[in-house]
Length: 340
Length: 78
Image 1: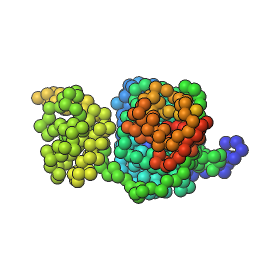
Image 2: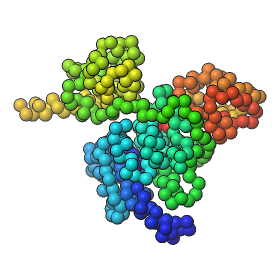
Image 3: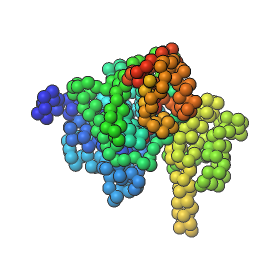
Image 4: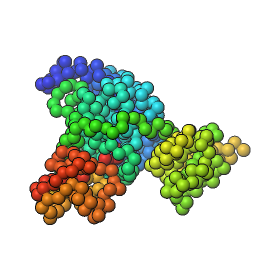
């Protein structure tokens, strides 16, 4: 680190800093090795996902021999080889409104490397509550957005995108070039270094949009907006995995349309499509433990919000979707057959 | 001539990254109505920037010739 503005003092700043990376997918795989190599003292990685073959083209820390393994562990193993001096904390779980306030205070800086709009509000609101800056990065096809929120009490994500409930795109898993997430993740790592070292101009109050097809960059400025209501973590329901959804005595609420496949024939499963949910709420008991699922997880969140507004007490939304649940049931049936 | 730049899923809906409208000047609200009638943009979550500064969609603001307007949705991929 012989660069001007960094030197031994800068290296010490990096060493004594701690960064939490939320999501070990495409963006996380780009951010993590650079943080470790730069000599960040403590790195946290949180993600409940496992490695799938379809991830490999953009999640370059993983290999085809690691399919089915937890991403966080493999990511940690990979970056520790580069810099054995770094302390790495792994959390084999998805970030939720419940665990975020427990984990965030341990770190100086949060990097949002998720592919989920809903969880971004949880990250934002928790960062505001804990007084941590967070570095946002996200992509849509060949475009990427980067910004630094809540930096030195600067504007937050809600100042740019306040409307949590409106229709928003689903995670565009298909059709993402590895280089797009790589470049945007690299810009996030770069902003993290600038924040830690106190150099350059941090993207606070600025939204950078990078178009990788045209190589055009545009920076949009924004300020703090007086919020009509106090920012709050409105999504207080928990997100659970399909495995957890099948445990215990809960009602599985399928909010897909009637013609969607696979059909799940379970005694504790009821199907009320999201489109008609509000008019059929009386079919569900307000006291029941309800695990809502759909095809990919997006409608489950919308449905859980509707239920919560209608005073249902124990609502959880299932990450992933019907095919994951179906797969689990199939495996269960197979293992029971084997035991017989 | 007002330039409107589209991003993310709104660019997909408009099937273009950018468009030049043959308008001299109009209110922001009128412009959004016009774009909504063309591309149904109000179903998306987005912010509006005028000359690279994000403004409130409810603001009474006159867009004049040579202004550059951008419609910015949040991205979700990663």
